[in-house]
Length: 481
Image (cartoon, rainbow, N blue to C red):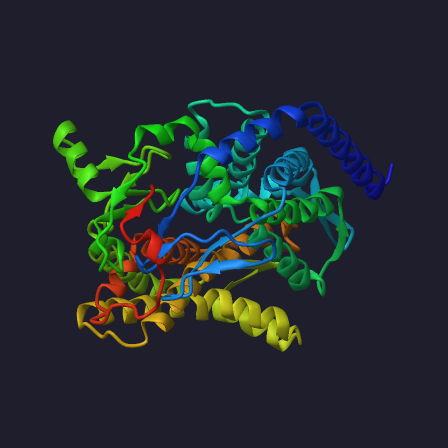
C-alpha cells in the first residue's frame, strides 16, 4: 500500500467517525445551545488591551469588532463554531499518532540510509546531553499540540452534547494558555528548512509521516481559527451566571474600567465590579480573587508586571551574546570536525542561492529576538518616562511582538531534525552545540516577557480620556457582567 493510499484511507475514516458523531447528537446539542444563549446577554465590555469601557456589539457574520481606541480585535463570529471545532479536533487527534510516530523523512548518502519519526527528533536532544533543550522541543513540538487538540475536543464535545461538567471551564482555560506554546506550525517550517539544507548533499525520501504532519498542522490551525471564544465561555458559564450580580452601577463619566470600578478577566473576558472582588478578598482573606466563570485570577492590573518584564528582557539580552557567538551545531564529515554558528547557517543558505530560506532564518533567529527585546524595552521606557504619544502604534507593536515571539524556535527545531537524520557515522553526522541552550533561553525569556507585560499600563499614561463615543445613552447607568 502506497503512502498516499494510507493517507486517503485515514482521511475517509476520520470523516466517517465525525459525521456519525454529529448525526447522533445534533438534536440535543441544538436545544442546549439555544437555551443557554437566550439566558446570557451583555451590555458593557472592556478592551483587554487598553481598558476602554464600551457598549458590547455582537458582530454580524463576516465582520470583526475592534476597539476604537487601541485597534485590538475583540470578537469575530465563527459560524457553526462548536461543530467545526469538534470535527477538526477529532481529525487532528486521529492524525496525531501517524504524524509523530510514522517515518517522517529518509536521508541517503553513498548507499547509507537513515530515517526517523518526528517524535524521535523531538527527543534527540536528550541523547546528546541537552535535557533542557530537549524538554522544550518535546513540550512545544509534541506534548502541547496533543494537549491543545485533546482539550479542544473535550470542551467542544461537552458543549455539543450539552454537558455541564465542572472540568469544562478548566479545560477551556488551559486550552487558551497552551495554544500559544503549541508550535507544530513552526516545526513544519523547520522540516522544510531541513529538506532544503540537505537537498544538495543527500537523497531525500518523503515518508507517510511527512504528509500526515502537513495535514495535521493544517487541521490544528483551522481548529484554533474556528473557536469562537466568547460563545464558548457564555455556554460554559451556564447557571454560574446567577451567582454574580446581573446589574451594577457604572459612573456616567467613566471611560475606562478603572474609572468605572470594573475588573476584566483576561482569560474569559468576564467583567465584575471591583467592590465585589474587594468584599470577596476581605471575606476569604486572600489577595487573589478567582473569576467565577473560568477560575482565573482577576486583578485590575497584573501585579509586578513591569518588574517581571524587565527581568525577562535583561535575561534575554544577556543570553543573546553566547547564543549568537558560540557554535550551535557541530558537524563531522569524513572525520573532519567543524562548528557552525547561527550566522554561519544563514550565510550557507545565501551562498547556496536559497535566499528565501536564508531570509526566513535571518528573520526568525536574529531579527525577531532583537525586535522583541528592543520593542518591549521601548514600551517599558515609554511607561517609565510617561511618553504618552503614539499609544495606538505602540499597542500594535506589542501585539506584533506577541504574534512573532514563538517563531524564534525555528532554529532549535531544525537542529533537532538534523541531529536525528544526519547520523552517517564517519561520512557525516551533526550534533548540538552549547549555543542551542542559550538560544532556547532567549526565546523563552522574550515570550515570558510578553506574557508578563500588561498592555493596559501603556494606556494608563494617557493624559486625555478617549474622545470616542463608545457607549449609548440607554446604557449609561447600568452594565451587566
